Structures are given as structure tokens and as C-alpha cells.
Image 1 (cartoon, rainbow, N blue to C red):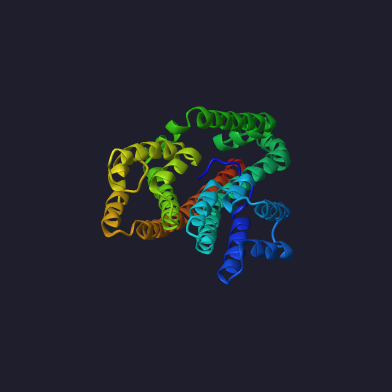
Image 2: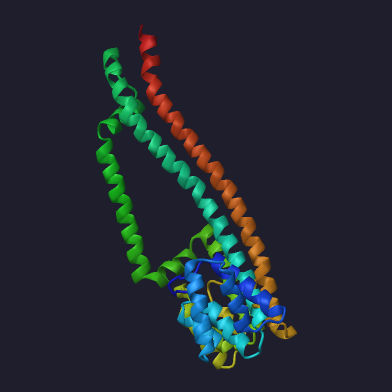
Amino acid sequence: MWKVKRRHTDRELVLFSQQLGQLLTVGFGLLGALEIIERRGSGSKRMKRDIRLLLQQLEQGATFSSVLKRIRFPPFYCFLILAAEFHGRYAEALHALALYYEQRRKRKSKLLKVFAYPTLVLLTSFGCLLFIARALIPQLASLYESFAIELPWFTTQLLLFSAHQNTFTVLLIVFLAAVSLVVFYALKKHRLRCEFGLLRIPIVSSFTKTSVTTLVLKQMGYLLDSGAHVLDICDLFEEESHWKMVSDSFGKVKLALLSGKTLSEAFEDVPFLHPITIEAVHIFEQSGNLAVGMLQLAQQLEEEHQQRLELLSSFVEVQTALVAGIFVFIIILALFLPMFDFIQHI
């Protein structure tokens, strides 16, 4: 969500937040809690080094949030801690951060699972095709020539691929590299247009809106609950969001708020929000429970998103298995059809 270069993994952030939050909850001071975590020696070398730097800077009078920003903790993490500093609510903020990054880690894991299976199957299938073309087809080619019959189209294409497999492989690599460069250039030069383009693709649009809305509501809910002002939150999204459309939209939301509109009214022109968001935020504003309401709505959308991911995962697995089965059937057909034709001509 944020465009800062990643320094710590979600797992590291969860462990650090849980440990520090628990120690603060039972009564330790910030310096004492960090010293205990340092002595425990848990976490990566990078995190241990950063904890030592935290202690040194805090002893010199720096604020917790400023040091976290200096050692490149995520902007959302730093801003939530900054909001907590004004109210002395470090423990609550750290527990919220641990929950947020743990949920994000699980969401990434599920999303990776959706794409890992078909990718593995396709790579395995292509590897098998190369093996057959290199080891088996040359042996069968001479046998097919001795049949003195016209070879089926599938067999002819398989023999052609075997004879020029190196060329086809190079062309495939060049094609994939060219596509990657085009995508990279488009994302770099026309990122905003590409992101809004996702909202026009039927199935992708639904996933994108649900995912981005969940992240925005969850982060806004935690920040508001920690005492951050809504205009400061808009500044954070505008300056630090990795999504260009989120950054662009929150600049407009801030202007709408400054002109006297409510948050729900300012959200009316935000294109990436889930359809129920505006009405729900209006109800939360009327009830005076904006932060809690946003977190509850984010949880509801998160569950909806997880259900869709599971359905997508099942659909992709079935379709991948079907494609792999058709692929294997075509190869077997291409290999054995000449033999069947030869037997019929005897």
C-alpha cells in the first residue's frame, strides 16, 4: 500500500509489535521493553540492529515515531505510532499493528497460493514438452519415416517443434521479456491510467475495489482510533500510498473536506471504493463511531474478499488441471496416431 522501499517483512513487524505491545501492557516502560527484546535476541539480524539503534536514539531524546521513520519502518506503522504518542496509547497501537500485519501476511499467502499452483503446472508441462521433444521425438521421427504414410497434423507440428525447439524456446523467452518490459514501462510512465484500467475489467474490477477498499478502511480506522486527524490521514495517503489512484483520490478528498463536505460526501467521487462504502461511512458519521465502523466494514469486506479468493483458487485449479489434461492428451495423440494409421494400412 505504501511506496517506501521495504525493509522489514510482515512477519518481523508482527513479532516486534506483539513483543513490545505485550511488555508495555504488563507495565514496562518503552526503553525497558526494548532492552528486554534486545536481550532475547529474537528476530532477524536487521531487526536486532534496528532495535539497538532505537535504544540509542531514544536515550538521546528522540521520539519513538521519528526513529521508526529513520530506520525505514512502513509509513502506516510510523504514523499510527505518531498518533499514539499524543495519547500515550503505545500498547493499543502496537496490538493493532500486530493484527494488521498478520492479516496482511495471511492475505498475501493466500493470493500467492492462487497463482503458484497454475504457474507450477504450466512450467512442469513446458518442461515435459521440452524433454519429450529432445529425448523421445528424435527416436520416433525415424520410425515414422519408415511407415511411408502421411502423418497427422498434430504429429507434424510436434516434429516441427522438436526440430526447432531451441529457436522456439528463445522466441518464447524474448516474447516474455518484451511483455515484461512493456508492462514495466506502462506501470512506470502511465501508472495511474493502468490502475484505473483495472477498474474497467469486469472480474478484476471487483477484486481490486474490494482489496483496496479493505486496506484503506482498515488503515483509516486504526489511525482514527489512535487519535489521528482525518486531514492528516489524507496527507499520509496522498504522499505515501503505493497505489497512484489512492494518492490522487485522497488529494481530492482532502480538498473536499476543506470545502466543508463530510467524509462520506468526499468519498462520492472516489472510483475505487466498494459500492457499500459511501452509505456505510455516512451511517458511521451519524452515529459518531467512524473508526469502529470502518474497522468492522473492513473486516466484513476482508471476509468477502477471502471467500472470493477461495472460489478463484478452486476455479483456477480446476481450469489448470483441465488445460494440463488436454495438453497431455494432444501429445499422446500426436505420438500414437501415426502408429494407428500404420496398423490400419497393413
